[in-house]
Length: 471
Image (cartoon, rainbow, N blue to C red):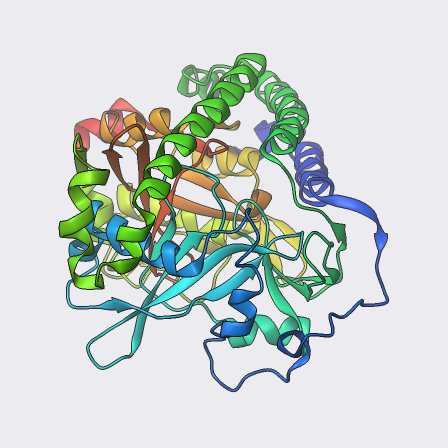
């Protein structure tokens, strides 16, 4: 069957070039900076801490107290406590008796200012058992960005970039290492923490710049995906993929812009409520925050609790390919294992090696692109499972696909290098803003809840009647 799909290797090269171009150009500015410009503050040049969790110091946190772009970490922490309760993550993650760490780990932006705070979830003995990533800026309605059941490997990440460096994040939350400078200066000697290689100088992007960048690349990838579909000549395959309709990219871009504007409106409503109640928030003990502030922030709440696809909820506990495997093949293997693997007890790899053969080498890992997912899953499932070869977007669309179509989505992360299977979804509508969260599992097997933002991109997964009738 593989030989019947025309120009597969040619298309692989096209997609590889496009995605790597996207990964490099989205924040590129100028040439490699080979002479690191180090800040003279003690916080930036100290030896790497022996503590595996590099909590920010008071000095580091108070440096930005007068910066109107940055939200005070104390206020963000209180808001995170409130949202964890309102959105029912405390009960879902079994964190009812836990607290958040007093200080966060700072993830900087490409302007050398805090972009995210990561607070640790501490049990009754003070042990860190989870992590909560929050926005450090007024970017959206709400501060929660990600809720996860494990602790990031901070020490391992910082070792890749060297002594004195800080962790830096792009708009999607992907991590780099580098030397931060003064506020509004670009970091220097930026290291890709996946490959360990130096990156070109990178700059902080506004939402409008993210939209422009996405637009260029969505057009290019959609055109190549359409060419790929049109090159299929086997009538059996054509019959199976009849529901794969080309994406109207120009409409997508217009809707992306509308989604961005709607998120800005929700952001303004949320932060107006925060400013009006900030002193009360800061003065309220942690244990009383949900009770005292809950009614103010959620007087008209419509809460749709996390709804899981039951078959994926069952197989998520299986130790399927959890040894730091490549995310794309891992996602494909989990879907295949869940829906088509007949001997689940003895064949827990979900045909992982088969999917890995379709992926493109990238450093010491492999990248899997939409066309490779479409082709590999189609062939191994006899086209009973179709992974769309181009992106869909929008939190509402993804929400209804999981909840109404009862099918998973494959969420784009790290500009094509990383993928996650979205197998659960929740929606929370408060006073003027709505949050969507998707239950995922990373390639190490940890449960993660990701908040979806206006630039949320994903691939739809569709099942044939053969599968649906046999479930």
